[in-house]
Length: 342
Ligand SMILES: *[C@@H]1O[C@H](CO)[C@@H](O)[C@H](O)[C@H]1NC(C)=O
Ligand SMILES: *[C@@H]1O[C@H](CO)[C@@H](O)[C@H](O)[C@H]1NC(C)=O
Ligand SMILES: *[C@@H]1O[C@H](CO)[C@@H](O)[C@H](O)[C@H]1NC(C)=O
Ligand SMILES: *[C@@H]1O[C@H](CO)[C@@H](O)[C@H](O)[C@H]1NC(C)=O
Ligand SMILES: *[C@@H]1O[C@H](CO)[C@@H](O)[C@H](O)[C@H]1NC(C)=O
Image (spheres, rainbow, N blue to C red):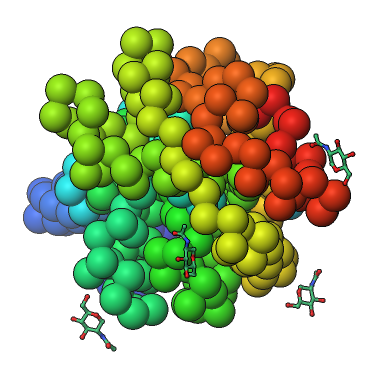
């Protein structure tokens, strides 16, 4: 036994074959205890250091950026795992979030469309955030606002907060979008923002809606409140009673200008990931909404809105000077607007 110990401690002490002297025996016991102690200690240390690394590894697992290994690689530029400054995404922290913007024009059904989208439990579409002038003062205030929205730090009644799988807002072409298109396109492409264009095919019906809406801004026919969107047929009928008179001198020029603006917007944003929707197509066929959910890679579910369409039926019933308008547009490229249902 003593020889075994000698073997461990051969550098420090040379032990002669046992002579059974008590002093030597005591020394052997001390040595044994010492070496055994060191041995135990070294095992202990090794284990603690292993525990430490495994703890460290656990922390790594928790804090590692979220990844969905099933995800199609082509989708990686379009998904985000935002870490909002204002709240914790909790159990949805590793659910991917997609960013979108609905680019549209006033009175093109975007309010209705957005309310449909927001009926999805995982969509936060935050409304017309750039109607506030300060936010669109210059490119840098626009980009700052976008950062806040896309980091889920922008609160509106539509925010679903931690379990949002798609976050966006609607943006009218005349709200800084065309002036600052270069910076915005660059931002959209860098961040992988998906663009949903929503336009109205019948620009004459759109014009009537614009005129009626701006009339009501002053007239406030619904119990003294101006409403751009309504939730009952009675309210819709009341608003539709007003028949605007269209200035026929400027009619064709106005329609043309709107068309040009749409064409320009499509061109400016032609490098983004995008889809083009027409209000009339959604009215006619709600299944179009499934295309939108698929475009945003959201779970498909039924969408609903309480909003009610204001102007129904033939256009002649909604224009005060119908005969003049009919005469001006008859035989032009815009004639189709006179007869279309929506
Ligand atoms: C941009 O507009 C904001 C106001 O929204 C202003 O504070 C800021 O100075 C402007 N920046 C530039 C570069 O003009
Ligand atoms: C949608 O929201 C629900 C509940 O808020 C959540 O459980 C679910 O994970 C979310 N889905 C996606 C795709 O984020
Ligand atoms: C139509 O617009 C033109 C040009 O702005 C204007 O001169 C004319 O008075 C307007 N007509 C009516 C009926 O308001
Ligand atoms: C996008 O539009 C620009 C003109 O503004 C044109 O030069 C370019 O070829 C278009 N790109 C695509 C991908 O269509
Ligand atoms: C359009 O104009 C043509 C001739 O210019 C006329 O025959 C036709 O009845 C007009 N259509 C309508 C719907 O007024």
